[in-house]
Length: 135
View 1: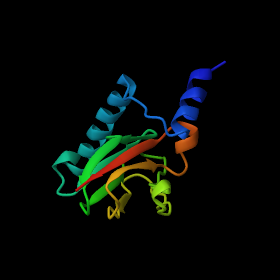
View 2: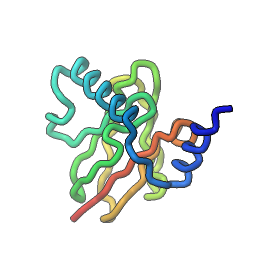
View 3: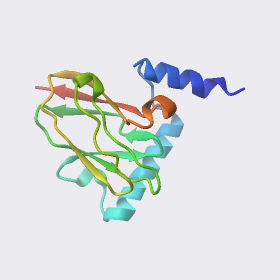
View 4: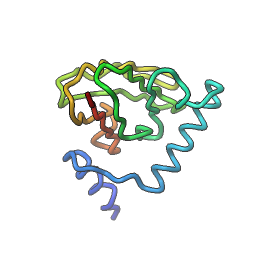
């Protein structure tokens, strides 16, 4: 019986922090390489703060921004759609985008931590991140 993935999904759904594992780090390295292949540059070199969506993870999972700073989520998966949902902040779920799809986030959020969910994958796969807004 595979209890560990179920327990992890329950903990993530409950909003408990999830430490980045070696698997997550490797997955995010793959996402960064995939972005470079698609766009010819590092996602960290973009003029807009960018978070990648890849294999049921946000890369990086947690991002700190200044209030009003532009924030973009880019799906670099080949076959899976993802969305961005700031449910606790009262924002509606974004449209679901497939590979190379872009979602720009309205970051006029109150200071503090805001949980980010992928609508179709937060409960089943633990695709949860965090935006930390600072003054």
